[in-house]
Image (cartoon, rainbow, N blue to C red; front, side):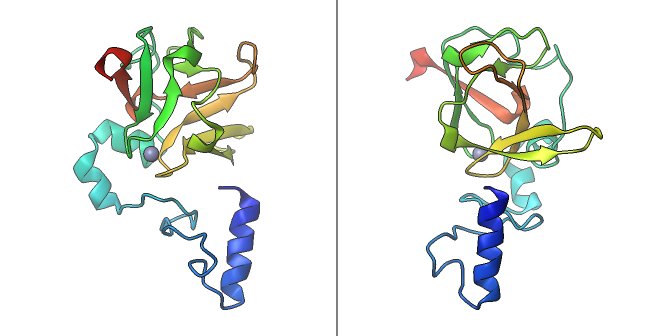
Length: 167
Ligand SMILES: [Zn+2]
């Protein structure tokens, strides 16, 4: 969700009109005030995620490069959100970035992901999260291959792979 829509929602609330009445409210994500269709408490997330998935998706952790499940995988299929199962990336847009993390030059759909600015390492990065549950996926950089020039650098722990053969 963009900051602008967030401000709009905030204004609407300030005017005493609920976001629900405006038809834009699925549920309010608790800490950040961002809104996502799938929301759970930390306790609920812990019940369905592994500790590593929880650390990455819910606490914006980063897994170790070259020591994660999918960085070298070339199998055809789709990568779904490990939190809510939304299809996020296709193997068609996966490439070897030599960074040690799964890298994609585009998501399955622009609507599948959201981004926000992240200053955690004291320089500007663009954080990428699942548009449905808000789970942290990784970051997007502008040093990717054509046609987009983008590199979605994604944690394996945030993904569940569904082989094309299984569909
Ligand atoms: Zn999700």
